Image (cartoon, rainbow, N blue to C red; front, side, top):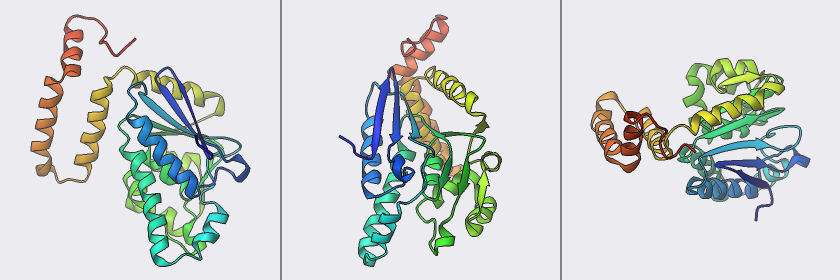
Length: 259
């Protein structure tokens, strides 16, 4: 079905693999379209409760494919606008996926790869991983990834890393907030597995609603959030999943979503 990505499903876990190792999993138009389709599909699959994003081969993702970049250089403004809108939609789709998303990063993450990482809910990397927002060194701007980068690392650090375009190591990425944690390769998989087990303890519907809640209020002034948040908790308490969760707590048993 896909030519640039692969999807594996085991139990309630789906893994989306960037699968162009011969070009360091570089992003092109086909991969962007396939990522949109994959995350839209997995986001509505009731059997899927957690999605991980990984890269085949030596690196997570080297950014934009050079052949694709050469092609876009010949596009008109209107054609480039359409191509950019598709890339923006890719990051937006990952960000708004109702399932928890985890980026597992290794090797390198350059340019647009960081948009994928920042759009995920969680991100972990091996301690030898390199990062860069390298667009300015190509005379470009990291436009479509910028909203997600700002949410993760804030304006001051974003200016430092975006305006210089310099490479930085995983420890700096974690300190800035782009990553949740940096680990030795041998520890990385056990940490991801531990996180997945923690996520499976929550009600699938309540996790989706909590993501939506956080996304909604993150861009709002405090007073504007009051009515939205009061309605959100009322919906959660009266929904079947909320009723089951509270009943299970009082009955000292596991809720029905934990197998």
